[in-house]
Length: 209
Picture 1 (cartoon, rainbow, N blue to C red):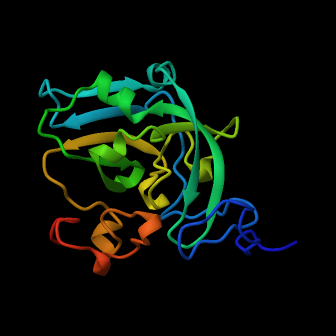
Picture 2 (tube, rainbow, N blue to C red):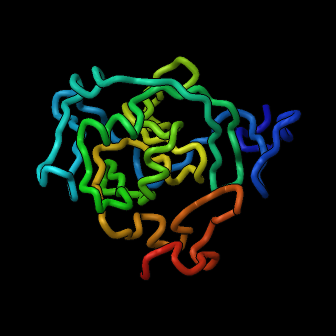
């Protein structure tokens, strides 16, 4: 059997971003160990520059009851593999914003995960139609190594922005870099413009180090 990251070619009739290929299977990549899920203590928080000045919190039971949607979106890893036409199901970013309104001056969010991992995205990316806190892919619950119980999915950006094991969102009135952005990855991460590394950043695309 071929290794899971061996190229198998492009999907007929559908272009890929520059430098990407279709693997066999869905490779597993992440920094650090897979966290243990403890539903009794798990929570999801929204904090930072909220409209009310306060913090919002949902337990696991409460989060599971939030309105969910489905959307088809691709998955483009910066290591150059792409998984096309995934059906994601979860809580849209727009729903989180409705339930926990940001201050009008908010321009970016920092998405926080287990072990202090983070990724920053623009509010416009957070509110995109296909951006969601996914719990299911192709009708099946996410597995722990792919982000169970909840991962952010931002299909139009490189997948390091699609944070696994999410625990909260911080509203920001000024952009700042997340975990990989501080370590040399591009602040925006558009795969169609092949924005992989910070040296490719143009003026106005990123905060200073």
